[in-house]
Length: 168
Image (cartoon, rainbow, N blue to C red; front, side, top):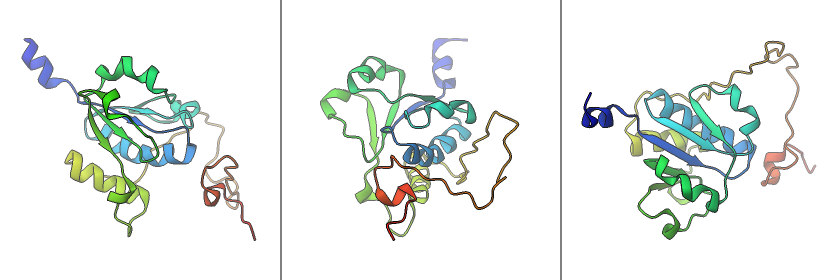
């Protein structure tokens, strides 16, 4: 096989940069999962879901990196998708193609996942989209909705509403 055909057969590699949040990382998995399902090679950088990396198939998950740690590996990626909460210096990125998820560009009538699906459709040309993140716990002793009324509380959430703790 010649080099030209190898190049055309290679999957486009997308890096998704998220801070350290568990919630935003899980929501960004909707975009990562859809990119992966549609033939992209995806790496999600998010320390919040890194401990759960075995729960997700098709998406490589790495811990969040500082910009100094990221710069040497930029050449691994054809494009970076940068979460709305991550600030990136354009000089730092050089020639790397970047899609910055800006809240100001989102459709306020849709939730975050709905907006990510619009990004997948409009920026990546995807049509086969799902909202699910296809998370599968590797531990077979876990039972889905074993405790139907159990509520998840995220005490370290940045947004007080995301903690699940009512002030009333």
